[in-house]
Image 1 (cartoon, one colour):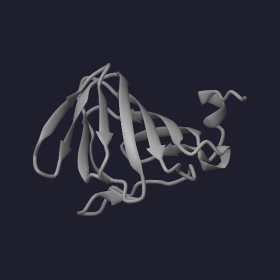
Image 2: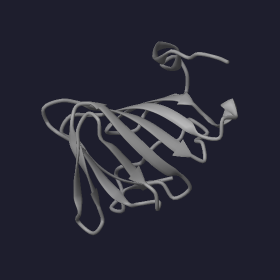
Image 3: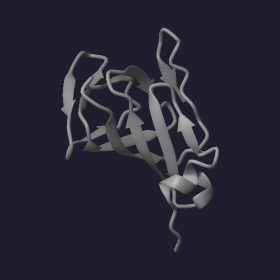
Image 4: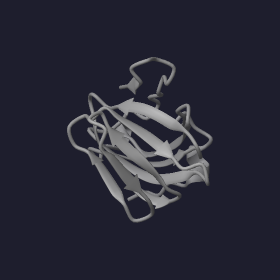
Length: 128
């Protein structure tokens, strides 16, 4: 058994500014659990095109609000108590409302190494 604090993660390479927010990689591949857990902050008013080609992801919203849009144009509202699941390596847009940051608990399978970063400046979005 072990515990880990957000403030401790902030002092390591497992605290990642991914371009439009931050991610505390609380549980990573090195922990041997078979999945990753992150405390993810999506900055207010931001839009990010993202895809995880090697990972499946589920995100549970704990505060703030926004939306996720798949590449067919279907938009899903995200607010506290909502989980969205990217179960097919879905290319998607993630948007946080302008009113405030959106905070998510993100789970990845297989686990992240923990230092991966998005590159949001390309036309096709960011993928890893």
